[in-house]
Length: 356
Image (cartoon, rainbow, N blue to C red; front, side, top):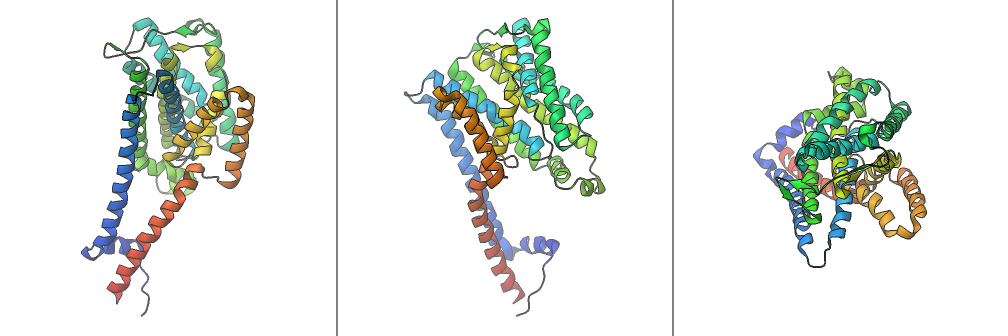
């Protein structure tokens, strides 16, 4: 039996035919499995705090993990899906934190308003920064964004409205006029994470996300296809900064305090970047693993704080050497390979029967 070459267009036409219903059914089954896994994780996130053994401080620690996951997801929009490198997103974390803190202190705004304001202010400043830095690439962009983080740290440390190292103390968090404690803040953090994850998922699977990835994979080919390099990179920077701003606002309210002693620290930017690289920048699962790693490692090594910094560096080097796509990609790879092989096997059998 002679083999007939099948082009991509022909393959799509074949798969849309009734005879290829098994392939579509298998894809739908995989989609359902993914949705069920997500639903189980969401249900656990909602139900676990209701267990009698769970204390408020535990939920505060989990909220901190969620904050880092959101921040890492913001950086992943740049590093993983657009191919840009930023070592200065701690600056946007500070912008989000101070935006919400100042609005809360002077205007008594709701926490939700604080989060939304932090997102828009950070996104706007991110777009302005992108106009300056988007023409740079690689190490030059990394150095430029690092300088931005130092600049933000200097501003919050010296401009009087930010109250320097004395900091801004915030009242109890309020949502819709209702005071929330650790449990309420935890659910607010979970809801924020779900919304950000959904937004990033929709972005990645949209035309805009495909334009981001086209610029990442081949800038010249993307430009030849009509992708506006400046527009999409500015947009990516704005979205990334906005997401990180949300994390910054949550970070301010998890302890109800912001100060230059905290947000002038360049290690925020480093930790967020480590979370992205270790977890995996090009998959949604990556920031989750990276956020857990960055927050929980010092927590478990509380008495060996200096060693935790060393261990982060060792893990980062190991990941770059042996799993450059991140630990998340390494974990999901066997499942993806198994699914791909099954789909190819079913499709090949159907094609052979049709050709025969």
